[in-house]
Each structure stands twice: as structure tokens, then as C-alpha cells.
Image (cartoon, protein in one colour):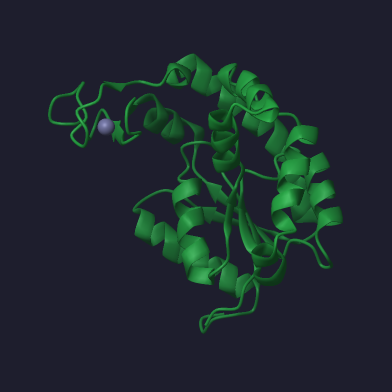
Length: 224
Ligand SMILES: [Zn+2]
């Protein structure tokens, strides 16, 4: 049994962060806490927060700190995360959020921050080729389209490019991400809590790389 741990995973959109976060959640038996999932749930619920968050997301902007911090704090104080740890995905995005996270958590705060590194031109290509079924949400790409390019193999729904997946919208999101995350990475590096892992290649191999890097840094596992 691998003991629980408090992890943060960073990575630009299209780096495979969500997929890898789910795998780390299974491996370390800790909850996967994704702000993206939280936003999607909020948008569906048509709550006051949902409407607020949706406005920013539709414009391709990040949801502001104060809105996000309260939501994450509420989640982290639930028993599963409090007792066993977590893989935090999509938070923190700014130094201000990282400072807030330190205040939320007991000492020593986050144990390790993993930066999943994929060059911008690679994610730009991945994201621009992405297609999605409007009915069931199944993901396709120009490289792996459904048998009829506009019809979902799973449900027969219409397969489209998301409105916010145009090249200019993607570039704008990546620039925002770089702008906000660079100081965050420096902040964690200074505290000796950052490890960078190469996110290019087969997802299984990336997972192996991640687990090795995490176990090595936390002094666990056999290949330290
Ligand atoms: Zn479908």
C-alpha cells in the first residue's frame, strides 16, 4: 500500500495533465481534485458561481483567485483529502493561490509539485486537431476521427471543434497560462518542492516517469 500524499500537478492545456492526474490518483489512492471538474459541475448547476465562472471560461480567461480559493478550501477540508491527501489539478495557478493553499493545509503544506512539461508547439497542434461530440462528450482528433468525420461513433451525435479551440483562442489561453504559471514555478522551486517531468510520448511511459520522479523525491519506492 502506497501511503497517501499531497501532490499538485501543473501543465499547460493539452499536456495530458488530466489523464495523468487520474492515474496518480489511482496509484497513490488519494482523491483527484480537479478545478476543471468543479467548474463544469458549477456551470451545469446554473448556480450563481456557475454563471460567474462560465463568463470567464467562455472568454478564454481564467476564473479569478477569490472565486476559486473558497471552492478548493471547501473541498480540501473534507475527510478523504484531509486524512489521505490528494492530487490537485488546476490549482494553484498563481502565487497568491499557492500562498492561500499553504494557509489551508497543515504543515508542511504541499509535499511535491510536479510540472508536466510539453512544448507549446506540441500542445498547440494537439489542441487545434481536437474534436468533440456535442451529445456525449467523446473526444476525437483529426488524426483519430470517427468513421464519419462529423458523426459520433458512440451515440450518433454531431462531432465539432469546440468554439474555444480555434488557434487564436488556444494561443491566448497558453499565453495566459505561461504568464501566470512562470512565477508559480519559481515560487515552488525556491521552496524545493518542484519536480519537472517530460510529458512527451506514450501516456503509460509518462505515468511511469511521473511515479518514479515522485517516489524518488519523497524518498519512497525502490529505485531512489
Ligand atoms: Zn457522442
